[in-house]
Image 1: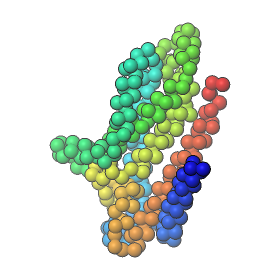
Image 2: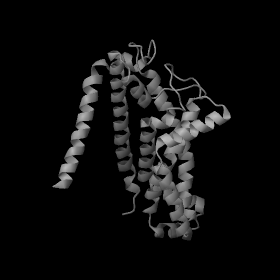
Image 3: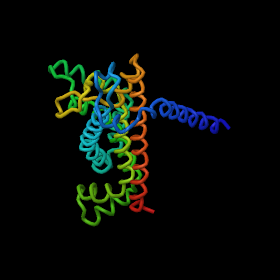
Image 4: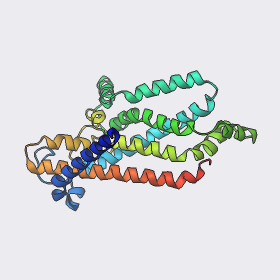
Length: 271
């Protein structure tokens, strides 16, 4: 009974959130809103759209996810293949990654901002990508690690017995077998990257324009919602709710894509 009540409350809360943003944002959501930048300033300008925040979020999330993938995939494979016999070291590394995962994103943002001040760097898309990479890398590593942990030890032994090297075992056997979990970890990290505001508040900056280089500041959808909802102008607030709808749809697409990839690669699972 208690579980049903808790589940019902979660569904009700989600339904109220979706209803609120659709009610307030859908009337102003149109093609012009999606294909134009704010005019007259994102805080006071009632005209224009959210193109700068939409593209900025995609640039930042895609860049951080790709950079994190370069770090996370070899780390997870190394943890589950090369350190297979060193259980204590494995557990210590996993504990360290879990601690890194639990650190709030605003702490990563504050750390990156301190480093930027020390080196005299300005807020930019590149700084935001690096900061978000530090934030989502532990999430991606542990997600991949959990997918690789469930692979039977017999598969590792069988691969070695056939003369495979550790590299071949990692990228031709383990990677193929754990593909659904790895794809889910990547998409989960992408969702966290595109939906986070605290880690990029002081590092990526904010601008009404679409960034044309990595060294220019970049707006994001979460920061756009945060700043524009506090505006006293109703048109600007409606633009914030429209951005919330777009962000919700993107997260929904990520979830559906994760399900589709898991179903597609599930045929590689060991029965």
